[in-house]
Structures are given as structure tokens and as C-alpha cells.
Image (cartoon, rainbow, N blue to C red; front, side, top):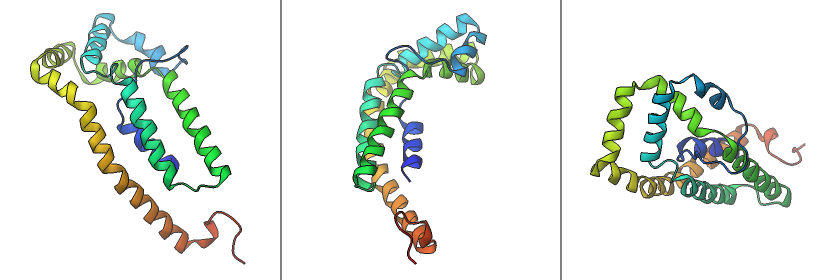
Length: 176
């Protein structure tokens, strides 16, 4: 249950692109050199205008809050708490080292022409584009606050159903 929720959080949280320390080599980092340098520079400009780089710390904070919510629904024995803490720390370290900007550059290059990128830059430089950037974090926070309780409830219900149907899969000693 925990791994599925973590994966969901990673997918829907804003992409952090700044890294602390030396970034780990990734397929995105090594392949982003395949993108036309002028187009890659415009894509990076778009990423900056979209506020992705500025939302890095806010996104990490949101993830930490979501880990806290998820951890409350996890088993509370010492072994489980230690595992959850180590897992949260390890995921944070790996995400901080991942080259999200390189990955986004490759993806944007695949789906958008240089003309498209320039149009998106014009939008994000406009007042409504700036308003969208300003509202994206509060909007995402409200979305997550609404989504997480429902997701946790569904995960708990599914867990209970599986354990009812397959009691032998429950953690701890199996009933004889």
C-alpha cells in the first residue's frame, strides 16, 4: 500500500529540477545532448517560466506532508516506523539527485516544436500565464488535501478486502 501511494505522490507532485550535491547520471542527462541546443535553451526557459524550478522546495514540502499522512495509516510498530523513515529519506535523496530538467527537456522536445515552445513561453510571460504559475502550488496543495484522505480510505478498504479473502497474507504469524 505504501509503495503505491508513494508512486502516486511522485507522479502528481511538481517536478523538482534543482538538485543538491552532484547529480547522479540518468538516461535523461546523457540523452538531452541529442536535443538541438537552441531548442533545449528555450525549453529550459519555459521550465523556468512555468515555475517548476521555483516550486522545488514547495513540492518537496508537500511530499513530506503527504509522507506524514501516509505514515499515519501504516503500521506503528518500531520496525515499520524505522522502515518508513528510511524509505522516505532514501526516496528524497534519489529524487534530489535525479535530472528532472534533462528529462523534461527530452519530453518537451518530443511533443513540441520550437514554435510551440515559443508560444508557450509567450503564454507564461503573459499576465494569465503568470497567474497560473502563482496559483499552481496552492491549487496542488488543495487538490492533495482533498485527494489524500480518499486515496488512503480506498487503500485501507482494499487492504481489508484482500486480507479478508486471503487471511494467510496478513503480516505476523499465520493463524493455524
